[in-house]
Image 1: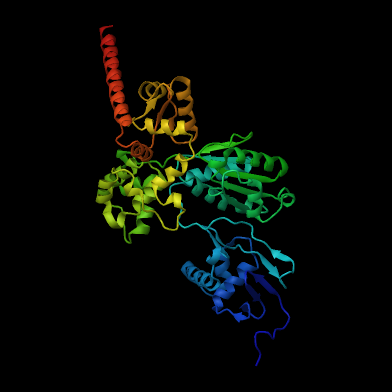
Image 2 (image 1 turned 30 degrees about the vertical axis):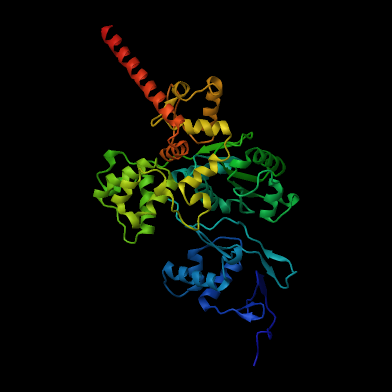
Length: 486
């Protein structure tokens, strides 16, 4: 009786610890055959033979079920079985990536013949697998996808938790087929300060500089915040040496590189009170879309009703339309219910402290997301940020000078720090005003006030703020009286 060593000649495709004998329809892990159903084997062959490309769901269904009409769920079931059989994701090794709304891609290197034979295909991307759908960002993503082909460096900026990484990943997914050599993700979040960035990038891309400069590819540099100066040097080097590379970066602050296009990610729009007449109107607002999407994922059967609309609007308003904060709040829907969420949303950051265990640490709570930015501020920036939390509404530089200044922090120095915090997206500059005004996100203000505690400094700031408001109101009253007399 033949055993698995007795083959007729035929192609052998190798990836990871596996050898795929295509003609014999046999997969070996070392000396052991891998148990796998026929449909899963068909799907694997279709993906491996086009490794590095995105194979559409329609193409896979047509190839695997050529004479049958089947639903997409059938494909998903067999993909899941195939991933389990291969140990996809174990020990950091990924084989099959899902590209939302497009299909699937085999992302591991594939070699034909012996282990030292030539590389047949190599992956065209290393984009992280998406764990949740993108909600409320269609307009932003659409603008970026249209802009990217005409600029070589795009930097996505915005506040902590606003979804810079989410947007960048979606843009890279949609642009993947526009670059001959694919799209490549380089996360700089956990890289030690002072680490050589070019060396890290080449390691992630598994290439050398001479090969990189000839590529037509999209390079995504995620979380440039704490390596801003080094990232600027790296990007300038890449753009000068590699004329067909395009760079998409995410950072709280622009890199300051020549020819950089900056796109600030806004907070999600919150419905106006006039839009609370119907569920359909409210669902037209991105903040509500995100809340409902995450609530449904958490609580089976969750349905938004008209009587829920004021409560959902208030939750989104208290959270400023900040995506991470909305996601964290919605994750508590099964424990607290909608009424409980609304009651708890004003209680500081405690509600926003139980994110997905699979999320990176800085996204598991709102406090951790802010910490990740706060710890890299200078001491003087930290001090100003905490003191600015005394303003519950917007403020001008004049108001800040009057309320939070001190002998070591006044005049032009305080003004420069406030402007710097705005560039770092830690306070928001209100556009379209003759007098520049700033304001702080509710979540950030609560974090800063927690840092200040009930110290003598906080009490003094509150008294100074109250006196400033009193003087301002008195001056406004006198101006109205004078105007009436005239």
